[in-house]
Picture 1 (cartoon, each protein chain N blue to C red):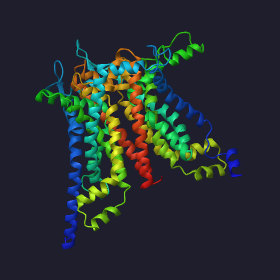
Picture 2 (picture 1 turned 120 degrees about the horizontal axis):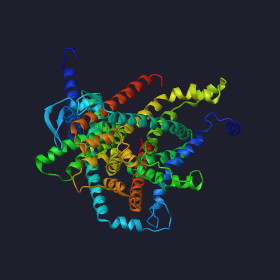
Picture 3 (picture 1 turned 90 degrees about the horizontal axis):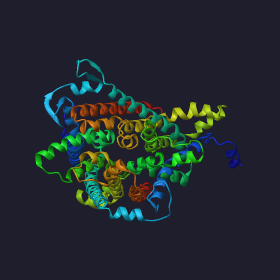
Picture 4 (picture 1 turned 120 degrees about the vertical axis):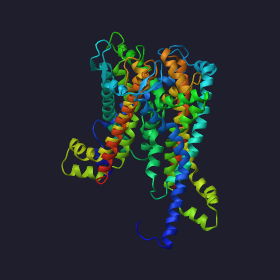
Amino acid sequence: MTLEAGQPRSLEAEATNRRIRRNWLLSLPAILLLLVAASGPLLIVLVYSFLKPGDFSGVVWEPSFNAWFQILFSRDIFDDTVGLADAHLTIFWRSVRLSLSTTLITLVLGLPTAYFIATRSGRQRTFWLFLITIPFWTNLLIRTFAILEMLRNEGIVNNSLMSLGLIAEPIQILYTDTAVLIGMAYVYLPLMVLPLYAAIERLDFRLVEAGYDLYANRLQVFRKVILPIIKPGIVAGSILVFVPSLGAYVTPRVLGGGKNMMIGNFIELQFGQGRNWPLGSSLSILLLLIVMAALLFYVRASSREEPHG
Amino acid sequence: MAERVRKAFSIRRLPGFTTVTMICFAALYAPIIVIVLYSFNAGDSVALWEGFSLDWYTVAAQNEQVQDATLRSLLIALWASGIATTLATMAALGTTRTAKFPGSTLIYVLINQPLMVPEIVTAVALLIFFASIKVATGYSGLAYLILAHAAFCVPFAYLPIRARLEGMDRVLEIAAADLYATPWQTFRRVTLPLVAPGIVAGAMLAFVISLDDVIITEFVKSAGQDTLPTYMLGQLRRAVTPEVNAISTALLGLTILLLTAFFILTGRNDKSA
């Protein structure tokens, strides 16, 4: 770059400049759209999180850290003492617990499924892959609604348990944390299976064979050979499930029924009945930061894995 | 001989995996199948089978709110996927088959941003932003929904087009240039026909994604601007009716149709590339 530019060199530089200008011009409309209707408004949320709530909705333009303070603490209205905001902590804990459980359940169910699909050959593999893709692209609302149907007191699950004589009366599953967990595991399972499949598909079975040749049993081969190789797929699947679970809105709203809120529903509440836009904004930014941290962890983890894979 | 050995001890088989897989697929499909079956139920129960009928489809089709919401959903999806695909095609042409340039990573991150930010956060941000514009301009039409949908559809349109472009040979375009075609002619006659399957695939993905959206639509829509998914969400709050089953089944059918077409298109890609 510091070299004296001779005649051919400056021609080359001009061509490069022209190419860069062309690339930017072609990308510009998409970037403008995304800045206006996706990225830009996030800055407004950031600003709002440092303002005071208006009386009915909206904000008052006075700087305040109260919204960030309110995430974890509450001030007693009578004696002005500061305590932990228990209701908020319950919601955060539920969100994290349910998201982690969802990730674990989908991993335990998804790994064998992905392995099964990846070890089929030719047309069979395409068929099973197509079967896992259909639920993936089916409207999330329809799938949540399907689970709602199954779990109702008069639904299939309760009916079959009763006709089997296992229970005398329908058990209330709907509108509990369990219902939300079942729903999220159901809805996000394909997100776990697809990256796992991609990882297992590339697995070199000669390594597995070598393991058996060296007198390893199936469990040892699975733990010592297969698991370490497909680890990037496990990390990818887990992030892909954990991130949308943490920000879930539709599933807890439909299956949790208002009381069993997760962060997403709590954020909405602040913009609706809660009338605390700054608190809703600070919660949104917090959720965004957690998700970004998870994605960054994933990028780090996968770039570290690459030289080995 | 080899066949028999493999049956005795297959290195690929892991005990219990097939059972778990079958349970998984049964669990994935049972709820969907129940919905589809009961949409054809004659009675108004969602638990008791009373014979086959198409009554609920008729009820849904004659419901004015459903008609309205369906038309609005399709209109938004058409506009949004059209805008998103056009912009995504341009961006893909600008960011593939070129050396890294200043800002290329930034462009890539911006385009894929909707895939990374939780939808509820974007929904809240758009609610705040559009609410103030609505107050300032007095306009509260469909344009907000179309803009919002177009934005989150961009990455879904961009990725298949980019994949198609990356798998394309430069030789034909160089040949066209050698034969004195102008850059525009080369683009129109050579590049565009070659990328077309990727563009169509991207447009279909964008269309499905727009059609399915619940959260952003729920936050951005003004009064009386229900789309099919937000209408269904509103219905679920009250009571479950077989009518919702019928709408779900119809939407499911449309999704599978578009998906199959998408698979055929991208599948053909791989062979020719």
